[in-house]
Image 1 (tube, rainbow, N blue to C red):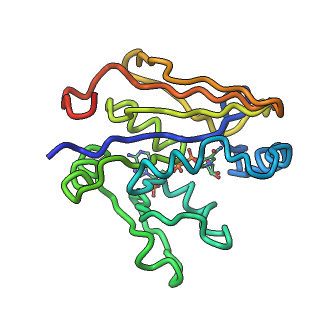
Image 2 (cartoon, rainbow, N blue to C red; image 1 turned 180 degrees about the vertical axis):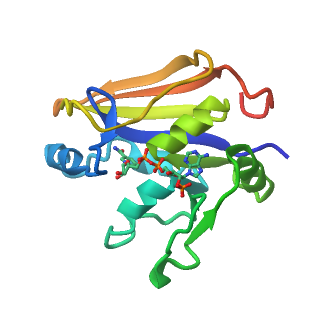
Length: 190
Ligand SMILES: NC(=O)c1ccc[n+]([C@@H]2O[C@H](COP(=O)([O-])OP(=O)(O)OC[C@H]3O[C@@H](n4cnc5c(N)ncnc54)[C@H](OP(=O)(O)O)[C@@H]3O)[C@@H](O)[C@H]2O)c1
């Protein structure tokens, strides 16, 4: 059984941060106010391609405050220590301490072909293991100077093939890349 493919869809500042050091995304919400009604920058089309959302504990701890809960797909929170899931989200959110590869193999065996991978540390961990298949990164026009980065150290260069590139008049730029190497060797997804 092929592992599930891992797809990233995330926004960064022009200097590559996904959140301030304290986790705040006020800058993203502020800039998002420039986006005209009806423009979702490809989000609905992206979520239609995935069967589950895998997010890091830190992303979940921010997302849990969203009201209403914005995700229709099943959510798996990856955490090595305990996470409190509110009663209202029981059955929609599960918590797992599985290693990245084991998680993608389990989800693949359960019939999930593609997952949405969310959270900077999580993306970095999956990238280090050659387990990210595609990344859509939307760069928004602000410099933060510091914060939580999307990318980090890697054991080797990771080659990318540009699949699509878009720019909007409100200043957002979006690149969609296929990750072409180094491969995890499964041959399952490329
Ligand atoms: N700009 C955007 O589009 C965007 C998107 C998503 C999130 N965010 C923001 O980004 C912040 C969260 O991102 P983040 O990079 O700080 O953290 P993250 O990737 O969401 O979560 C990191 C946590 O995931 C857990 N984890 C489980 N398995 C792991 C593994 N194999 N490797 C690494 N971590 C693993 C660890 O928690 P344990 O300590 O429990 O093991 C780790 O501390 C939040 O502030 C959120 O609001 C922004």
